[in-house]
Image 1 (cartoon, helix red, strand yellow):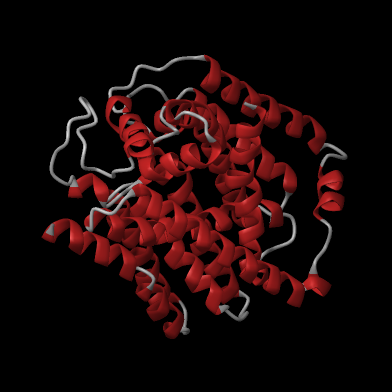
Image 2: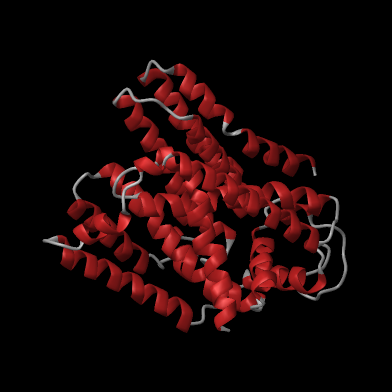
Amino acid sequence: MVFQILILFLLMVFIPLAVGGVFVRLEEKGSRFLFRWVSGQMILWAGFQIICVPMILKEKSFRIVMILYLIYIGALLLLSFGTRMKHLAEREKVMVETRKTFCGSTGILWVLFLGLLLFQLIKTVTLAYADGDDAFYVAISTITESSNKMYTNLPYSGYTTGLDVRHGLAPFPVWISFLSGLSGMPAVMTAHIAVAVVMIILGYAAFALVATRLYEDRRQQLLFLITTEVLVLFGGYSLYTTENFMLARSRQGKAALGSLIIPFLFYLLLYLFKRMDEGKKIYRRYYLLVTATVTAGCLCTTLGALLCCMLIGIAAIIGFFQYKQKKSWILLSFCCIPGAIYALLYIML
């Protein structure tokens, strides 16, 4: 069990942090750790989507996806290492910044925020939530890992059937199968414990990044996060709220879209607005990260293609008339190409 947990920690925390070093030029003081973690997860999910969907459509085995994805991770780690070496002189120690934030009047707010977060994580692991979707999505993860086949078995009975193209275009459960297959932990435990906990923390990391764009004062940022936690805790007034998905169904792709992908996309758009306000350069890797985020949204659910492209499109229209740098908004529109491709596949297939 300890070995399985270490493998999952490596796959969901350490590797995304390392891969996030590819976007070192986009990091900002005070949020580098969180930005690197979330952006690293986006580029990893985007690669999994690009690798997995063609294999599903060709009805290849799950083991081929695992091998190709591991090669992709290795290539990203090498690229990240090379990028970090080039910008080693620009690096500042994050631990020093972190110690400073715990000092002064924000200390109590930090304790309150971390206490509420720990409470949510404990309840997520110790309580059981009746969700009919688990009979489908978690079953897909279990069948994929055990049978080496993807979306060709009925999740309710296990019997062989035709290719389920509709769900195969958003193979988030297969990513959970990858974690399960590599760590050795059963897919059910991986989904309900490991993935659930990490997705909640990643969601608050994305909200923390948004807070850095909305407020400059650390105290205001913490108040924003604490308010968000309270809203999430009391957001179960319906089965279909984003808050309910974030806590009770965080292991599902739709929850990842609402609580992680879209907030992080908001952060990236706010980042672009700020750079334009200050007249600073927009790096090419920024557009790569936006494209990866859109592709990651497609991995979570087919609806992600529509919602991510709508959000970018609205921002592009506003920015097109607000700023003179029209080239940047045209390039931003091209970031929606992956979403358009998967939406077209959904319509055609």
